[in-house]
Image (cartoon, rainbow over all chains, first blue to last red; front, side, top):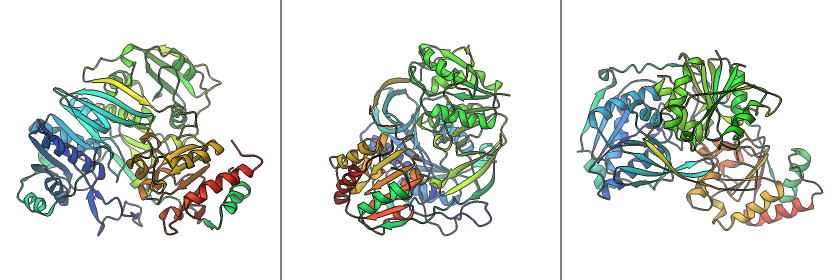
Amino acid sequence: MKILVAVKRVIDYNVQIRVKEDGTGIVTDNVKMSTNPPDDNAIEEAVKIKESGKATEVVAVSVGEEKAQETVRKALAVGADRGILVKVEGIIEPLAVSKILQKIVDKEKPDLVFMGKQAIDDDCNQTGQMLAALLNWPQATFASKIEVKDKTLEVTREVDEGLETIEVNLPAIVTCDLRLNEPRYASLPNIMKAKKKPIEQINASDLGIDTKPRIEQIKVEEPPKRKAGIKVASVEELVQKLKNEAKVI
Amino acid sequence: MPVLLIAEHNNKEVKPFTFNAISAASQINEDVHVLVLGSNSDPVAKSISECSNVKKVIHINNELYDNYLAENYTSAIIKISENYSHIICSANTFGKNLMPRIAAILDVSQVSDITKVISEDTFIRPIYAGNAFATVKSNDKIKCVTIRPTSFDPAPSSGGSAEIENGEPGDASELSKFIKKEEIKSDRPELGTARVVVSGGRGMQSGENFKLITAVADKLNAAIGASRAAVDAGYITNDHQVGQTGKVVVPDLYIAVGISGAIQHLAGMKESKVIVAINKDGEAPIFSVADYGLEADLFDALPKFLEELNKLNTIQK
């Protein structure tokens, strides 16, 4: 079995982002970038399945600018066998990413595609479901537990009401939740080894896909600032304030 | 052209956020049709027809829709999609799972999780965990939009009598199968719609200690929330998680206990009307969004808080 894992390079989750003064977007110069957190869970799960003997190859793919190569390299350092970077400049929407991934799936013919459930930059939560639609494959989104069976996958999904279990036929798309596993850190020897693993580079334009955004971004603004609060000295004061000032209890 | 709203329900009752989505849909266009895909779901179609914002209910009653599977839902929706300018549903786990599958088949770039309708094609949506708001314009012929339910007031659940039309089921998909759902039942208000939410974080130290939160929540008729750290540590189940990838809540009162206030948690609660933070670390980022901060050990503060609440003559419900 072959597993393809899609990873995205995003602003690190610990960075307090800043909106550009001209309202055209977010400041990304000199900002720390990392792998989208749930994509780390996706790689981890794929590598674990390979280690259990149920998969033979894990391929990491990223769609983005040249520097997204670092994100692919990181996936290689934690156990992916080889990488693919599809190069594209500027804003790329989930619909275009899923069309690119569809081309990669046509070529690689994986049995499973894993990715994070949501990217923490645009917060769209679309790519996995869109890819499943384009391929007419089943989708198991927000996965917190995956069991590989003979020709199917049993997936526990985190839903608003609690947990749901579904069975999907292979091939399938799974989008991973943060509680699926504990992503490992890359060891130094594995980081060195990863440098020798191959990364195939493809230009999105060569795939014949129109990646021009369909959605016009008119402006980006900071959220309204909350007015500064106060510190209270005691529980008694807190309850009095809530009762008499805020009038919420 | 009318707009199509996809109802979320359990074949007996309408899920409350459907009414928030109806309200957002009618801001886009007052001609709102609601699609109920269900099995033995007459009561659902009937309650939705009583919502005064709804002009027509399309009820597709078939055992295919006994359980919600995006693969089955999608085909039925695609079949009627060309009659509509917009397809809309809630941006909760129901709609997040479903809408992109529809959008990709229609070759539409979806607009996710909108918090405001500017016009029929222009919307505001949060990005970067709500640290920025983007105004976006969709140029697709059909617009696929998911709405953040807590940003729209629910539409009235009565006063209407819309026509209920029976629709044709879509193709049965063999791709996936429902196995089970473990719903956590509770007598408390739902986290997404509660007036008061009391949340615990890693500072609670154990699941057992959440009983301190429960006691306060009981007194305030509150829902119980949690940070991702508390859920990851196994103190409490995932349905309680508030944050960027959990639930977004906007209660009148949000009490954060032993929660440091990571960006990802703030994304889920910082629009609350009044925020209280109880934390022993005076430097914790949660204090930056709190209206009232109490720097204290929660194991002293929570029992005292309950004691003080007990002294009050009346408490709002």
